[in-house]
Image (cartoon, rainbow over all chains, first blue to last red; front, side, top):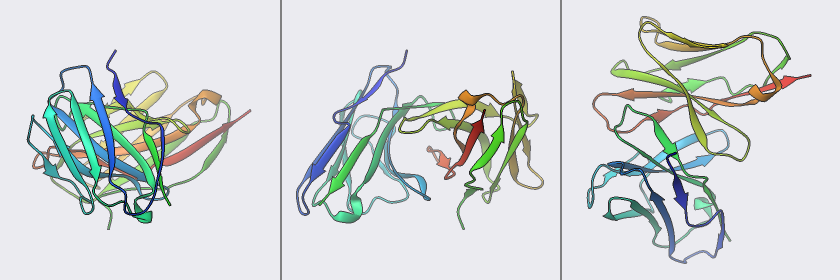
Length: 112
Length: 110
């Protein structure tokens, strides 16, 4: 079974803090993705990576950065958290853009 | 305009009913389509892929109409366990990532 794990299920941070969200997959997938999910807006792609050290902006990259130093790990960084970044963050991995993506359980981030 | 649009619902149907969802897409370059299912407070999981000829998997049938740019999902003989949010997803060849609709919520009632 493919497994995608995320470092925290729930996280509470203060405005201005630097936040790291970690994602690890165990299926040797080339592609990894970070989404945020908000009511009425669905899943929106923040960043994705198709290889180690490679990254591409998604639809809403502003205020975020990513790091992929190893194939199995993809980190999302909020350099200075703001209240409008309160959301559910979902990581996914897959073998190709048109193939199945496997999601982690999500991290619900609250920024106060 | 969103690239993939869905009626958010909720669709409230009795057990045993047949229910259909539609999804429209605006990017004519989209080549592949999928339906994902997301249970409450859970992550999305692939339900089925949708190809040009459509496909069927048990009680679920997915169809693609390229001329009108819509995808449909038909669920026959609804079960309580079908209650979930169904996400319509598209992929175009010029982009490595998928585009998700905001989902249609289905509530099957006893």
